[in-house]
Amino acid sequence: MQTYNVAIVGASGAVGAKILDKLIERSFPIRSIKLLASSRSAGTVIQAAGRLFTIEEAKPESFQDIDFAFFSAGGAISEVLAPEAIRRGAAVIDNTSAFRMDANVPLVVPEVNPQALRNHRGLIANPNCSTIQMVAALNPVKEAYGLERIIVSTYQAVSGAGADAILELKSQSRQFDSRAGNTAAQLPTAGSERHYPIAFNVIPQIDVFDSKGYTKEEWKMINETKKILADESISVSATCVRLPVVTGHSESVYIEIGQDGVSAEQLRRKIAEAKGIIVQDDPAKQEYPMPLAAENQDAVFVGRIRKDPDHPRGFHLWIVADNLLKGAALNSVQIAEKLIEDGIHSRNDN
Image 1: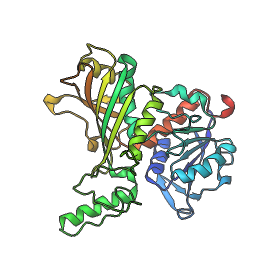
Image 2: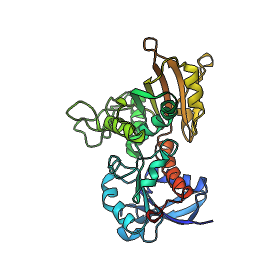
Image 3: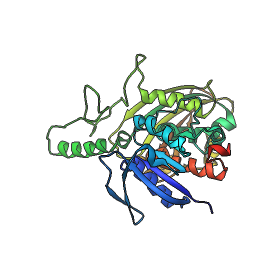
Image 4: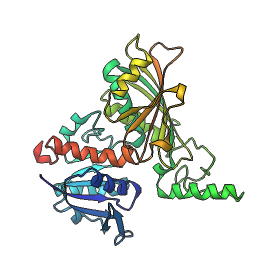
């Protein structure tokens, strides 16, 4: 069996650590693995699957002889080092937003649009975590019945904002319990002029606003959905909200399909047939997806599937997934696996 040299950029972060775990768990054909991060993290030793790994500083020469490079260290790092990795022959799978809307860069969820990988030029973008779980659940609906409109409200975990946001949630929870003042420095964004506590709170802002009143996170969902589904005619609108949940994004999704006469049960069966989807939808037994149950699970969970009472082609769904796994690390590893399966991991194979 052919094996590959792998590098993970941002290995000291939450997503980078999950990528390492998934590579080992899924028996990815690794010849060697190199963990890379900033100079501050160089020399740090981490443990995964009973093995010790030492993090090295990420430099252009770090990618010599690397076959697959997973990037999860921020857009600025990807913009500088991803071209260096590609120049040295690596297939780069980038978890940041730096290249997602580049017309020459495939934006891929393997269960949805694997055909887009055949156009890669050494660089593949991993979509936004909230977009991944939504399109994974909606693609079987689109293929069977057409899809005309999507309105999504997200309920996103603090882990999507990084490790410091998790620590702040836990600290604020303790402060709240002791009636101490809540110290807020991370949310809505670390660079915001104003910060709000997330413990026992809901913040209707993820990333920064533009002149139209939408945040960058909301535009990511709007634009990435159309690109992944290869359909600019779909109407998409998003409202993205941060909740005091550590891991697991939830979404309330309203859709309008292209066919009349479709029942909720038909929609439910079609979604359940899709790879990587688990339908949990039995209101009589109070069975529905929840982020606490989805944590550390690879699947996308879908429930509360019901027909809109006023629109004959309107339906409502509730979608939940672990944002660090299917929303990031797992999807990245699946992209690499698909490149190997199709024999197109190298640009020379296209």
